[in-house]
Amino acid sequence: MQLIPFLSDDQVRAIRREFGSPVFVYDQKTLERQARAVLNFPHAFGLTARYAMKACPTRAVIRVLTDAGLHIDASSGYEAWRAMLAGVPAEHIQITAQQAPHDLKALVEKGVLFNACSIAQIHAFGRLFPGRSLSIRVNPGLGSGHSNRTNVGGPSASFGIWHEYLEEALAAGRQHNLRIDRVHTHIGSGTDPEVWHRVALMSLEICARVPEATVLSLGGGYKVGRVEGEQTTDLQTIGRQMKDAVEAFAARHGRKLHIEVEPGTYLVANACALIATAIDVVDTGKAGYRFIKVDTGMTEILRPSLYGAQHPIEVVPAEPQQRGRAEYLVAGHCCESGDVLTPAPGNPEGLQPRLLTETCIGDAVVIGGAGAYCSSMAAKNYNSFPEAAEVMILATGKVELIRRRQTLEQVVCNEVMPAFPTDAGRRG
Image 1 (cartoon, rainbow, N blue to C red):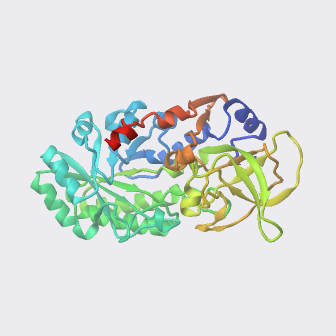
Image 2: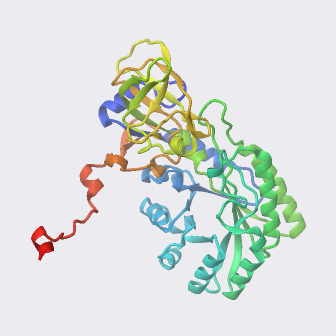
Image 3: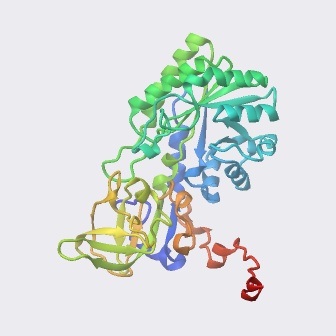
């Protein structure tokens, strides 16, 4: 397959026969290659690379990446517990969350690190652990992203402590005798190295105002291109810039900062594809469009409907044969007009047909770039569709199931039926 290099047409057919569709297919070799690239991020005085597990929290994926040497960035207390269930040591996990965990005390006592994202969270931590060390997340005032919805820095983002309130945050720490020795910033998922460098310099300026800070975590900004024309962040370029800036900081302030990075998308996006099936092929007349309807959609991949995000798509005929090509829109299986997998770039309201292999009912339709914010961020169980299965192509070439397909019984297992009064009882 041209657009999804770790899969061949024959593998697509074999995986679909064995595991059905839709099915996510991860590739261990690609995951490990991306992990090596992140761990080679240039640094001056030490590096910790964390996997932002919200991108894809499937246990087998976490295990491959942490076995490669990555630590974990968790976005909730539940993610932290989930990482521990996958075998990650508690001390290798840091929580950076909009909502402070209700069981923060238990998590920190286990050894999990906490990154306070607001002044209220500083007070919450300080009341539980006066005199301890703490990390704080600061919004530096600038962000980056392929759309406003992926930009988590700047005045339109609620993430982190606004940089103008840093002194108030430090005062809150002093109130509880906390040692604020780690600073975290996050700008979003853009690829512009100049924006990234500017935010990195702003983050160093923030560190200069936090006298005990010895660790700077630079979250975000590590985008990968999923389709032709999209840029991929050059980690070596931005890393070298950062290394020079950290060395200059050390010369100026006498502090050798340990750097942390926490990519998610960069590690897993192109290490997974979703194999679906064409369930219908229809058109809307001469002035309209040709549609391929598939047995997946926003229940597995929400990004196109949410962001107008682009994913590579290839059609694999059910039996090997040569066919021509034609333009199609690809529509999901949900009863929802927005469930379209071929929106206009960056515009979920628009449509953009793709030139694909001429498609028949029963063909496989493979959607690439499905490793990040797909399985983890889908509209699961909408229209009561069960959660898709997931498999991994191991380094040996063997394909193993890593998540069973959900059953309808599992979809409804937490529902409780109250004891409704009978008609006779209501009349009485």
